Amino acid sequence: MFKMLADGTWDTLYMVLISTLLGYLIGLPLGTLLTVTDADGIRPNKVLYKILDIIINITRSIPFLILLILIMPFTKAIVGKSYGTTATIVPLTVAAAPLIARMVESSLKEVDKGVIEAAFSMGAGYFTIIWKVLVTEARTSLLVGVTIALGTILGYSAMAGVIGGGGLGDIAIRYGYYRYETGIMIVTVAVLVILMQILQWVGMLLSRQIDKRRKS
Amino acid sequence: MSIIEIKNVTKTFDEKKSNIHALSDISLSVEEGEIFGVIGLSGAGKSTLVRCMNLLEKPTAGEVWVDGKNLITLSSKDLRLMRREIGMIFQHFNLLMQRNVLDNVCFPMEIAGVKKREARERAMNYLRIVGLEEKAKAYPVQLSGGQKQRVAIARTLASNPRIILCDEATSALDPQTTGTILSLLKKINQEYGITIVVITHEMRVVEEICDRVAVLDKGTLAEIGKVREVFDHPKSNAAKSLLLERKIEQLGVNTADGI
Image (cartoon, rainbow over all chains, first blue to last red):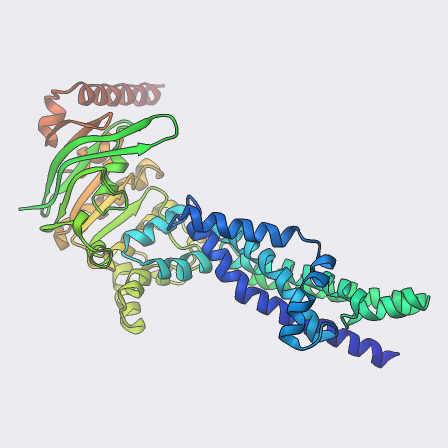
């Protein structure tokens, strides 16, 4: 049983970390594009903003469980099967990317407009401003976003257990729900709670470490 | 020789209901090596005018010539290069909060592609000029307003500008700190021959450092001339009311001192 839980924990971490990483590969550029093209951004573009805005809203409004089932053919086309740990990464990434894009957008929008203007006055181009002003100045908020994203994906990954997604959620459902082995279910949930606590704690610690706006 | 020439500049902001004329048909020139003041009440269009001088704000009509080049017809790449010759400091300093003082001063050199080691050496030198070399490793949050503005001045010096635009650079500072920032600007002007344009609503700033002054009133140029002439013999209503305000202020201070 211990091995099963250890494997489950490993599978969960594998799913969560890989899909958050992939989610950022899509969500970070997407969120940046949203910030840049918004009406008060550094390069407003109404049409592009509206298109991205609508796509993100649509993907975000589909409940995760439905999304899981809805994109099964897509998952199968990419991974070769629609169940198991690796396959779950696909719907998790699809769910994570728009969420991450929104969080990146809100973080980048916190950056002081005056600092952006100062960078323009120094002759900085758009990429310099995005990378060295927006992303760098918002790094604390971005890291808090990573923590929230990881936590949300952890929750989603447990949900994927319903359709044989692998990991701790899978164990909780197979043993706890289908076989009435309440003990195993409680232990599984406890492991999930601990994972969440650790994520939160490490995330907050790191974001405080890198924030230079604090006096001490 | 004029280093900045504003020709018939008009700027309108499209608001939802009506068009706001921030500047209407302004023409003026700033001579190389002088300290030029632009004064006016808030809403007179001073900030818009100074932002037209480096095209942070694009005029609706008119031409902006800096150092013999019409900024409006420059390609975006040439404009970026040109902006390196036009430094700017702001009311709220606009430093990068996540970088220490030294790295803030290095920032324009990073943009210009200066090697890191050389940039650091030069940055230390600029910090020495503004008297803050011992704060090189501090972060902006640990500095006072006056110190932040000195870092901002060191930062604009880092791009070797021929012009420095000051947008209400002392308005967020107390009178004493204002004095030190003003004398620093004067020193930079005299020692390095950098032309300075000062936008302010404080008469004192103009009196202390400017050679010539333009008075703006509701987006139009009310008066322009040598500071002494404008202040001693104001012709426009705008200049007269600014002077009156200043007198009342001084009277107020004197009475307060008397008590």
